[in-house]
Image (tube, rainbow, N blue to C red; front, side, top):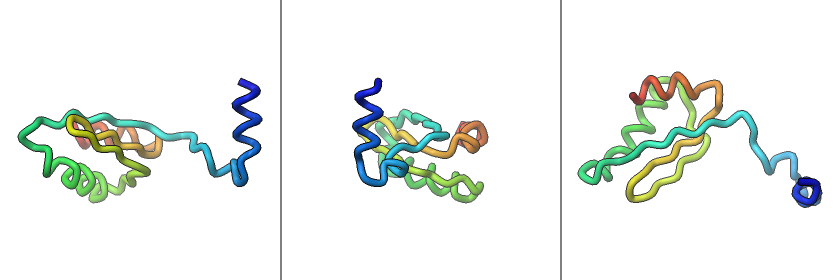
Length: 79
């Protein structure tokens, strides 16, 4: 653990290297809807005032990273 801390602290601007207070929502995408789900999810969250910090897309999943304070609301909206 100390080695990892020292490594991160040795990186210039390391205070911007790690983000805390983030949450992850994983959405499994049906094969028939691969093209439209990503933009729809982004649009719905944006319209509800929820910012996406980052997103990762694969053939089967979308993983959305957002602020922890928005996680439960985003989950309810996307359900």
